[in-house]
Length: 424
Image (cartoon, rainbow, N blue to C red; front, side):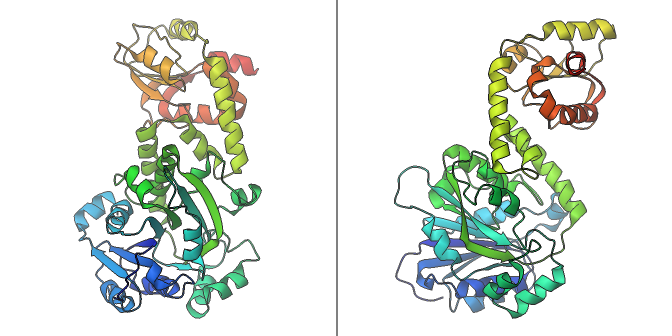
């Protein structure tokens, strides 16, 4: 390890598992940074590799300020629950000595000014919450043939690769449409946390520790970094984009089926943990619309929530009971308001107004879930009956199809009499 007297300004945290070849490309790209090597350190957090990972780290430690942590893997646990990159990143971050953490994935190849640009995005001397810098990452769009991009990365510099692929859409960042529509300036958007991906992102060490780091309950692929971005944003951290802090993701063939399963499981954990209608909107908006649309949908919800506050749906629920004659054992009410029939069996109550929801559930056996009903987090067939009330009327034109799809997924039968009548 080089003897460095100067304190590092950045700590680069790289999780890895049995990808020694790709790790070498990532570390090589850090060795050719415009930022002098004495100004940053690299922590490789190894999730129990059995290949030559340790040897690769030892070789690059001759030229870079390196730290290495090896975490033995419990193969039975991994098989049962999936890998936990959150745990690995947290252990790597725990070794950091610098005021700014830069997160990369193994196989991410950084441009020449990658670290200098990340450092420039942070005002580490400021008090209070700071910045989170999202770096632009080529190759995440997955439209370019994987072998073609891999061949380029093996034989050309990152700058040459970007020159070859950057002009067309195939090698762009998957977030490019949202970023382009916002003029590549995401500051000021409350939904910018939805774009926080830790394959290429940086945050102050103090802010990372203040929010508790990554949630290690996330297993497998998906949402562990977005959920961290959500907590950082709630802490007051401002998100910004740096196109100068660019990198390229090495093309790997994903486990689509496995990723889908873990993504669904992880999203349910995300939603259960925070119970925020904004998260439900996020999932429906972030993959299809620019950040401006997220802001509009969020404003619509706030406006409607204020207008819907006095709506009493008790008469609607009583009318449903009269129509059914016999109440089923498991009921879910989407848009419950502040009062539900006291004699109803233990039900799941859902509403976007936290105060009214608490009032409706107080002193009962009902389960209270704050939300819109777009994504309830309930399992398939969790209810015999789902009632969607007129408290969703102001959102019906926008979200009606999604609301009914979720209701039918959760309930054996669905009733939305006031909404159906109003839409005719």
